[in-house]
Image (cartoon, rainbow, N blue to C red):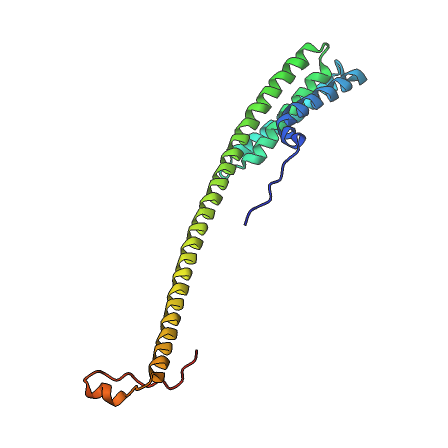
Length: 201
């Protein structure tokens, strides 16, 4: 059965590619808003962000280093730590140059990590499509073989029916011939054909 082809909108295709830049830009903007509202040179705010970022990094290290380490949890913890660090620097720093430098670095790291997952997803999608196409080809081959077999059986049945009909017609025609004498055929040494009993035409 043919599956419907669904054309995705270009925004739906571009949104995952823009997500890392949107995330880091949002953190930078919020940090600068926080800076404009009194976070600049605030030791308490800076200390809070350092503690939160360090706590997230430690949690990520524990999640990654455990016996049954959870990569998703570790990645989330490290991403949270980087986000808090970027927000703290953007909120505490005087100018925009250091926050922009960290934003560019964070965006590059985010795209590097995302590219790895995109490659894995693409590889899995290609493998899934290949497996589906092989399965469809196998089923199509089996269906063709079964169709040929069924066609051969139908042809054999048709030829058998045609032979039976021709034999019945020959027996009826022979019995209606003038001067037909089964005893004369037997006396001549020819085998006598069985007389038709229930002949359907």
